[in-house]
Image (tube, rainbow, N blue to C red):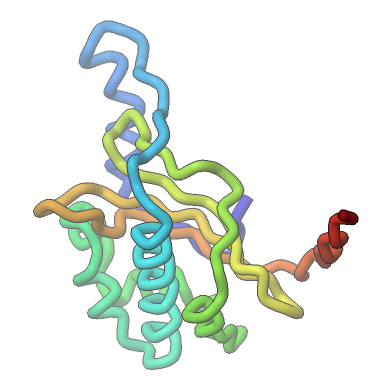
Length: 165
């Protein structure tokens, strides 16, 4: 779905695959996350703005340090620079996410691993900013564990029709 970049520790796949084997039963299904609109805005915007600032400065230290311990352990700042090189080399400006409202394409869910996933886009033009983010609970808050970002041509949305009275 997202070809530009995806970064998550390899342990994520291993954790998901091991869960059914460890319990001896079927893996539990994802469930809706208990998060309000403001929580969604804060997490998604701060994540994408951190990527944007790292791309603009070439310094991925803060992005790495904001991540969950597993994210930090799996990603050096140099590796993050390599992962986001495509976005950085295209000079993509993601700062519009500071003022645009993200449109979620699925309800935020708690995955069987206990991580929260949010997928959607920011309706910017001429390019739409698509995201898929994964957060791990650490020290009482959600911290970045994986992120996928790409851009695609914006899809025009028809204006809503006024309702007749």
